[in-house]
Figure 1 (cartoon, rainbow, N blue to C red):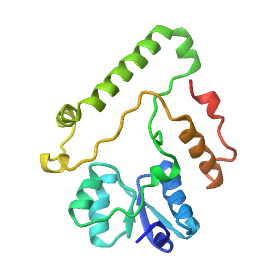
Figure 2 (cartoon, rainbow, N blue to C red):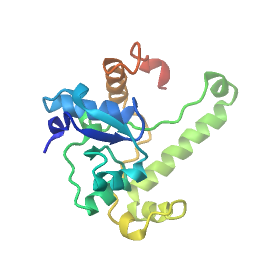
Figure 3 (cartoon, rainbow, N blue to C red):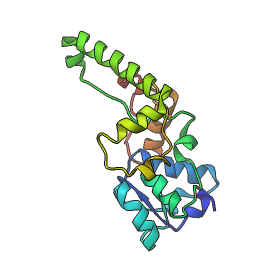
Figure 4 (tube, rainbow, N blue to C red):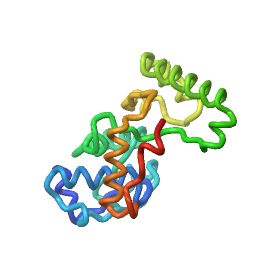
Length: 185
């Protein structure tokens, strides 16, 4: 199986017309398929394993810990959508308004520094990162042990954000490509 095989299939994503839909569509395109032939179904990540198991959907664009659960149930990875967008795709960022940043420059700077420090620490100490996850989630230890931890870069990957912006326009999510330079520091 490959991403092209998703044509005519139901694929679970957490939100329609978001980063995951763009990424799956790009995986299908890169594999020679037509993403317009994929039927996207909106499901919460934690509902995806059961939906796959019951046949409600044929595939899922899942994140951890749902991905580890799906693999433990015999599911197979057929594509890496975020990698198909760009190597090191940025999937999350913090934003503030220009006004807040101008009025609270010191707070913003300290927040950026603290965030960068904590992300570097988590990257360097995966066992401790897993332990911290148990303090604010109910992920069973057996599942958490199988979870693939992400990389936590302190800076956004501008090229990946630009690629996502272009895909968003190409896929009809935006009327025009957002100005990435205006959004990023």
